[in-house]
Image (cartoon, rainbow, N blue to C red):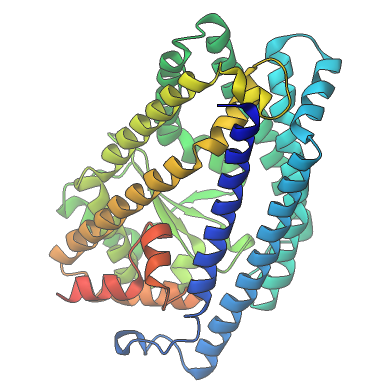
Length: 410
């Protein structure tokens, strides 16, 4: 294979992936105005459903503009030999191989952050504001952006530095050491994300004593599920949208409820949401997903190790000698078709797990309350209730609301 042929393949993958995503989004948008199924026609009144349709349409057009802009910018960058020019530039700054790669990825990360910033600002302060979702102040937006940027530089730089060191010390087997490191890092993040990362952006407060806490603890004791702590997170300072999640495993299990969830759902409905999350734990979904994710990481790193030193990857971008950062970028593009397939398989499995977690909640009499909570959450966030089947099959990690309704009513 020649460098020019490999370059053509890389370009073709970028273009085909972009067009495929455009097609999926278009097909999905064609169903925005479908009539609601009879099972879901009690969610909205006529005005509310029209607002939800408008919200989806506006986001579709905005996403289309953003996708086309990003695609055009990438093609222009490639056409102007941007990857080689950036490589030449960072080599002028330093001659240390590790620092060259760190600077290379750092500049790309910084540039992508700057490019996405106007879109993020517009989405929050124009679209979300227009439909009553945004509660974020501009000063908070700036703080979030700076914190995310700093965290990305520190954590990303640390992870990349360690992997680069493994690559320099063990060129052929670096993927094994990198895999072991990523496994430890993933486990630590699962254990301490809520304690270490979340407080950088949100305030976590223990759930106060009262009816809700009693209801949740009674259910947890009933199913022999030990909860380390139940936290309330101040999500309302950014958005009216509600959420809840479960983190940790073993003896370090935490339930985090958004304060908006407490305003929108009854105590029994919140208990139904908890029952669903406990179902994930009882069915070993959390451990299984972690193991599967680590296996997928190992597989990806192994495939990377087979290509990283191939000079064709560098020459495809007009660079004479192979190097780590160009090899990674070329590999990431070439790996796109495989990542689409693995993502599809992960989504299929994830939807199966969601059905099982719903079934667990149903065992304890929460079928109707879980349905009502899902309906309220869908209404509150203007979720798409009539998505295209192909879009769901490829992109959805959760079944649609209609599918979950039918499953719970069986």
